[in-house]
Length: 183
Image (cartoon, helix red, strand yellow):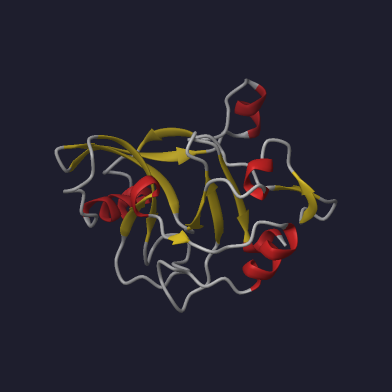
C-alpha cells in the first residue's frame, strides 16, 4: 500500500497550511468518501474461503533503503514466531473473515497491545479498509471545516474515544488523509 498523501501542504513547523497538496484537489471538490483513520498497525491479509492464509505487515524503508530507490508502503511477511508480531496475529485470528471476498485486503490491526490502544479496545482485531472502515457521512472539506471537525473528532469505531483522523477514498483508487495532529 502506497503511503497516503496529506490533503494540505505543510509549513515550517510541520503543521498543515491552507494550501491543497497537488493531486488532492478532488477531496476539496467533494469527491470520494470520508472514513475514519484508525490508529494501529497496517497489515495485509490474504483471504481464501473466509480464512487468512497469509499475513503481512507494512514497513517503511530506512533512509538508506530510500536512497536505493525503495518506496514507502511495502509489506514484509509477518512471522508467527516473532514476539513483535504476536499481537497482529492475534488480531487476525480474532477477525471474522467469513464474508470477506477472496483476495488481498489491507487492514489496520488494533487492540490493547498495539500503538497504545487509543481506542481502548478489549481485544485485538483487524479492520479491513475497503469493507469495514467507519464512514463520516457529513464532514466538511475545506481547510477551516476540517480543522474545526478534527479539533475533537470522536471515533465512530470506538465511541467515547478520539479519532486519529480521516482518510478520503476516491472510487478510482486515489486516497488522501488528514490527522487531528496535523493542525
